[in-house]
Length: 225
Image 1 (cartoon, rainbow, N blue to C red):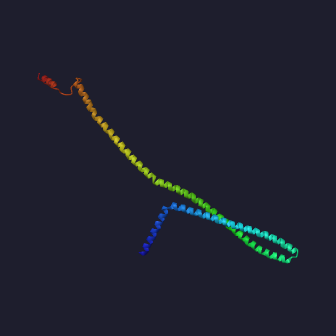
Image 2: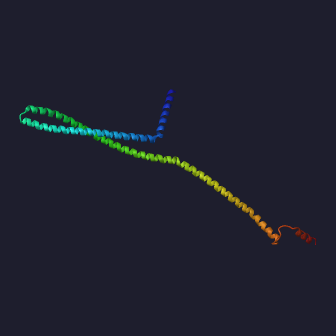
Image 3: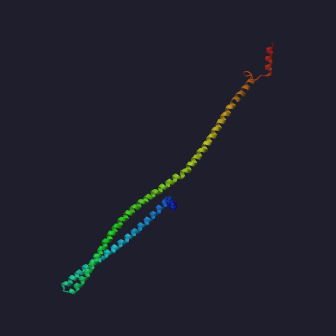
């Protein structure tokens, strides 16, 4: 049971860490790129320092070569003058300088190899960093687009739906008003026709529409005869 609970706790911690990482992926990416940029600048400074050491070693090698050439010339002159003690002294110094020259040449070769390797690594790192910068820009553009697509349209769609509902209610009300006016007009039309007919009949235009007392009396007299 304890093992199960421990596994569950670790699983939830891992899920929470992943969720936090996903939610802050853009911020993390920006900071990682800043760190990478700073690291690259530090590497460039290291290469610059290595190049400075190499240049200093080359200057030292040139000094040794100049000393060797000068001492060899003087040693040869001492031998020509049978000054063996001076020639011997010069030979010992020349031997030491040749050892220094060998060490200096090895150092220069090491610096040259290191500088070449570091430059290749920096060139590759710069290419990868530029690719990451372009990817970050694309990710930021995509993120902004997704935010607009996920947030702004919801409000737009809601406003459109509300406007459509308002328009529908307005159209329905207008349609009802028009139908009512049409019905009222239809109802009032027969009444107007009947009123006009009654007025015409009362004026003696055409048969009477209502029975009058005199008309009834005349009809009864005619029937009695």
